[in-house]
Image (cartoon, rainbow, N blue to C red; front, side):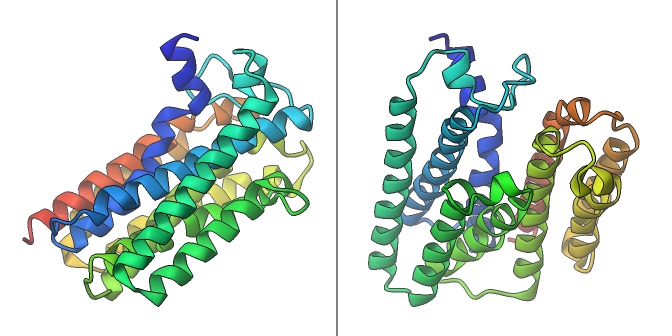
Length: 277
């Protein structure tokens, strides 16, 4: 298996969506030196790895076609269809990743003795399982953004802040909600071709997606500290929306731009926080 194929199978660049909330939460906690930060990163990254591998497994089980395989963000089971990974191996892998996330997460809860952190963690795991595991499978029902919003936005950002024993402010809540919207917008755009051609999600995409993508800029603009970040992210998001192609499959090929906007948002917010330290 080539390294490049492995990266494509994992959709490696999208893992920044699980790293980003911890980094932002750590920044809000004034970059407090703590052994908890790497543990929190293990939790978020392993949970996302488990979800991505589970999606590959269930895409194969449900005979979903492999598409956009020439991009960094293929749709369908790239590992099984292109790399000949056995479904049983993939199933073992995603169960192992989710188990690792749960064990390390419970370790963090034990070390912090935080009931709030336990509640956030258990809810995040529950939503993540609902996203991929039958019979609910939110991701396959066109409402996967619900789980994505919480699991890659408020829960990990606020969870990191709480774990580092830092008070939660309104600004931090708004940033966490913004991050959740951006992560959800990535999911919405990337999986658009998997919805029916005449389905509500495809019909409403050009209304809902811009709202999801542009709202974070307005949310963080209420603070003078992140106003510059809000303006720059808004401009980048607006350009991306204006030049979106028409067909769902071509829209999905724009996932790299959506991920880049999420990255830009994270970097600019962290820089804004750094300037205040």
